[in-house]
Image (tube, rainbow, N blue to C red; front, side, top):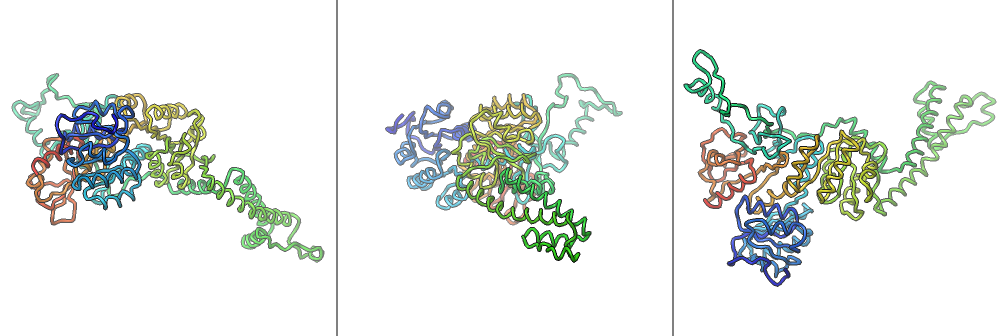
Length: 604
């Protein structure tokens, strides 16, 4: 289809619809979210209906139309009826293109809700101030914490009211948990997982006892227990459980200060020196230390030895004269003179070496050359792919103090400059993964995170890494859910995440005007942490916890009453009805938050 009209025109003029601009994986997931969970009419604007995910988007039931335009121009916006649309999502293209399209759409429809994808989060915050009803989100920033946490094997957390919410599994679940968020967890069959299953209330134990001692219960008078009949469902359901828990401080990577200091020193030395420079410096330092030891042994005075050694290093030593030797007032013998000569010569070499280091650092900086990992790199995380997601994952791990080595095949990838500015080593080249991983010191690594844009490339990197180091933890970016299920069932000590799967719920909720504080992963499933405000005229007014939770998919985890500044966790009064000014924090599935949003729209 060209820019002359609709690709698949609707039967009648469309209005009150949502527009998704893009044909990438995030656009595909976002369309599925809007159609399947929010049940709203969607029109999709793509650059090419035959490329990327556009063919799959056309096959999604419920999509009102798919329109093809080379760019998001005024003509394209009019073709998708932006004047009568309720919302617009810009999830493809550069930051500049998305900003231009957002401002153009606002000019056509001042009341439209606009959500745009922005890599530059600071710029996105400023753009939000220019939009009357808009939000700027970063898909890579939304998903990167989940990848970083999975690489370290620790829970990802979301901060709410000074507490950090995270998911705990099985034995890590404590008695002070907020709520159970999943059960029937089986790594061999992830399709059995139930998110936010029906939870037992505080009186569940009393009800169970009353049932057991009843006429039909398994306990007869006298304390004799009846055996349950086979097939009655009394057997305990198999599988693991996951619960939502809160911590006062964010869970940090347990890296000891000594190990952290050692890494920083080695990393700094590798940054400022090459291998040959380090060899010269270490040789000179060893010679100075040996000479210092000789002086100390001969004079038995530590302070005087330090004083003389520093003068010798600075080239300020006073040589012995023949008259001094004849008078017996020399420095103290042949070995002491040899030691001082060694220190003086080494001191002379330090100045040109320092100059060479400065020239090398400045020269490599001008050439834009990333540095390779040094021989001392150990216990690090290898990040494969320096796109938007890989760059953010590497930066987050570096901020935590975890050693990082990056791999990238495209020398023009924009993430190279970003990680180089942080001093992170980068292995460049399009050779076999085996050789690249060897250069990245796979044998000494703790984890590998493959986050390129291609599922096959990511899987190849993970399998090659596991072959080279059977103990390494692998985290793979995969779009296909079936592919990910086989991955979980086949590999141990592995995790799979999808950027679009993690980011799409947040974009959909933002498009509906909901504030999503963050997302938590339960394997390939997503749990949303959202905060809702009870405003005048809102459908939330008059609802209690039973009304919100009974339909399923939603748990109220905290309430802030209108006259209070304090969040009340696990609010005990399930019958209290919400009033204007109250705020609630919910943990919800994608369908649960969509159902709540739909109910609010209908009732409001």
